[in-house]
Image 1 (cartoon, rainbow, N blue to C red):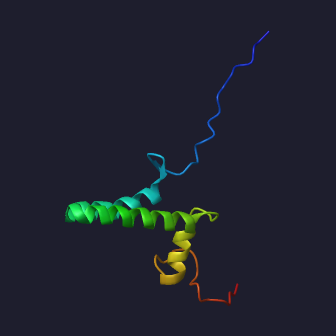
Image 2: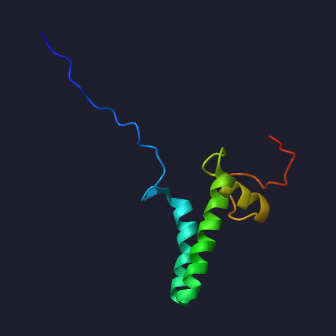
Image 3: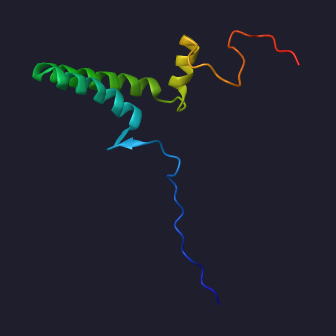
Length: 97
């Protein structure tokens, strides 16, 4: 009789990118001010680190409970950039056809 094979099915294929144990976007938001502070000097590196942690905590709490592209949608809604190629303008309310 044929024995069933044990295959491990991956369950984490659609996970977002990680930098160490942080989400990639949160890590980049926190590392950017830290890198700017480090290039400016020793005192500014401490302030850059504090600012980076503060910004990352704020961004993470803003992002909690929302879908992955919520920031992209908010950016488009407030600035109108980037223009979608296949969608009509956001101010167009009457659609014909």
